[in-house]
Image (cartoon, rainbow, N blue to C red; front, side):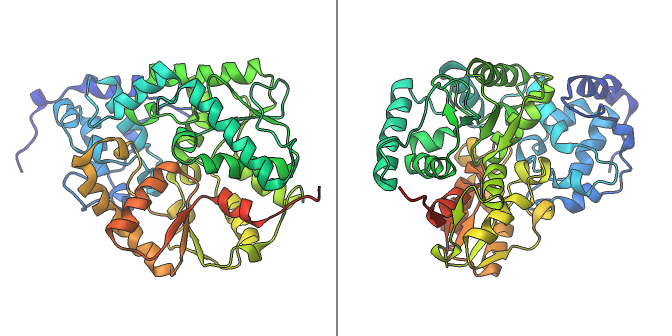
Length: 407
């Protein structure tokens, strides 16, 4: 190996990265890195493809190797899952460094990642759903809900002031999976909850979290905060989506320097089951179920036990993957990889082999994940590796297990 020459190093590069780094904790200090390699040992994809070495990436930044860092394939291959940081004795935030490099040094995002961000800035949601289509979908699912529960008064409220909860959707639920809207609304109806949706800014997702676009991130969060204030809600509730949960919970602190109440629907459902607000019958879901931990909501936001509490009350046969909880493996589709185009597909499937093996070892017929990114990646994994199972969100199982109030 050729020795580094001092003239090739740029000491100012490290300072530029640190100055741009977004955090709600102490500023990142790269001198904390012990070069011990625990991050690389913790990365499930170190060795899946070239240059998947977080230790090397951190050291290159610390040494001022500007050109090597900015041209590294690691920047876009990393799923930003945070398992490396979880393994690091000094808690060096590698995913945060990746995000900082992606968004602040003139790099072009691969695939259509930036296009997704631009769509959301321009139209209010990443899938360019029109306001008319959005409201029509809510009306349609309200009618379906009323027919299902036999209550013509069952509502999916829009722009209702003073509700307890302002609910944020994933555009996939509106555009591709409208039955998810019905399923979620059924749970809120059974709980007798006071809730509403915004007619204007309703998209919980946030691909700028992956692209590193802090300006876009700020605009998106300001829109949500504005609706929360306009509608005088008591809390913002985020649908089942890992990165959306992370963006709304962590993002309000780093981009808005605010701390208004944000909760996951998982936390809400667990609370309602625990305090008896909703009644459930686990015998309605008898197939074996396993759970995939989304990195953003579990490892990064600590929503670990709530999904397990729910599953243990709404299914009869729940088995864990190994490893699980904060130690679980990323599905291989995070960090924006699902929006990086067809060229990245072979890498996504190579990364997904670990997850396929995890799933197969459980013997589960249903794989549950409360994340739409994970859902899409797992769907590809199941097809690619020909696994004998299907996918579900948690709310599907809760909705199916509900003991409905008597009319």
